[in-house]
Image 1 (tube, rainbow, N blue to C red):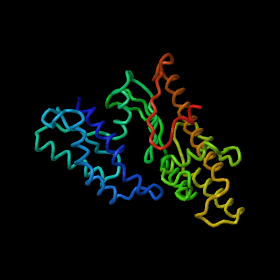
Image 2 (image 1 turned 180 degrees about the horizontal axis):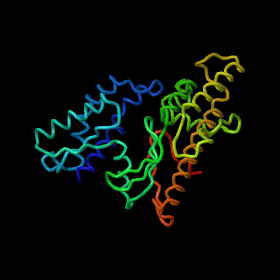
Image 3 (image 1 turned 180 degrees about the vertical axis):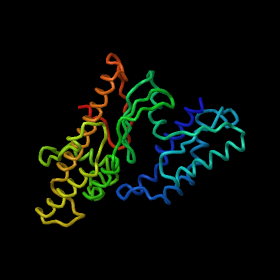
Image 4 (image 1 turned 60 degrees about the vertical axis):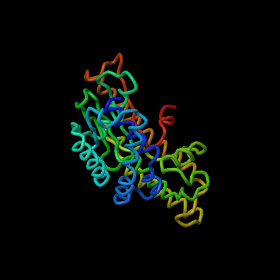
Length: 287
């Protein structure tokens, strides 16, 4: 197993089996000091399990690769310090990893994807459109000018009090909205898609969040309920939010693809789009 694949295995295992950080603060956001402590508690067993499953010892590694940016500084510090200790103890080369670049490149571990390709990175903390032209060569086309989509969906889920909803009380914000949206109708409460007047590839979600919060407050007043109670139309609002987010992302991505083809950055014959997401399913956006 290569160092890069081992690094990705460790990352997947950490967030797949030890993602307590996200679960304990589903609707209140990540708490830096709590996240740091949970990283400290889990990093040792995660590394040991990754090495055990891979059948590779630390002595056999050709290098140690670690995320250094961007991200939550206290959590990054835990990983960096642990890695530097390994580097010092076993005298291994150190490879600093850019978090988002690593996400963009992981597709090449499992699929045959040639450079250049367009990559869409979506998460609770990021929203980026870029062209991967090489391992360390990225052309940034667009990014969120305010908050990320995952962050917005978490806040909307909290405002809708979805942790009290019997169908999704244990789900993360984006997943809860996606679940309720499946049986809702976005046409009942359509929201304006952001940045329609701007002909670029940037994203914006804070304005949409404000529109949603205003609509929720109006519906609470109509139904005579207080903030914290579940609206009768919660599924329709969830569907409308998901629809607006998806359309916004699709429109900007389509614009980026056209720009790249028109300017010869990507070939019109085999232009490739790679999507990396962690806040809700791509299923809705591909229907």
